Image 1: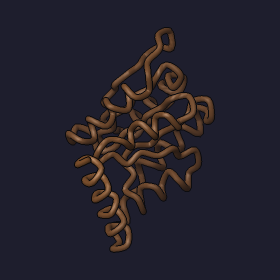
Image 2: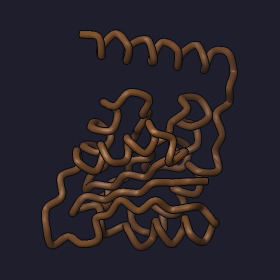
Image 3: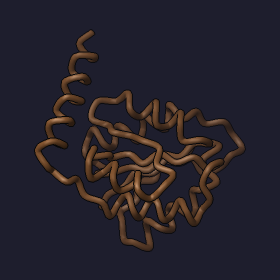
Image 4: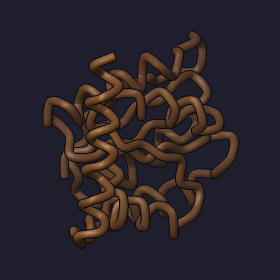
Length: 152
């Protein structure tokens, strides 16, 4: 699977563990940085970069990491077609995909450690959208909200 990854200056602490897990599982990594915590990188900028890879189809899913996961999730979810959420437990990581067609996993590097982050990434990427009628109908409502909000 093509997976984009991005980290702000606080999220970069999970960078090595996440990229290692992706490569071990033979995913194609689209690395959007950052590579260091020496310079402040704002999470909305990384959220936009990740969101654009989802919107233009260059990535099927994405991983976005900031300090808490909260800012990353809020910012990424503002983009049409991006369904981003913090998932700091395995249930949310797979259920979010199965029921809500989650396409961006947000993590907080101050909340989860490297081993748990790897488990969450693997769980998220192994999950598939259920496709059941009730889930599809809910997504249609979300898409209608996006259209209405983008039209003022």
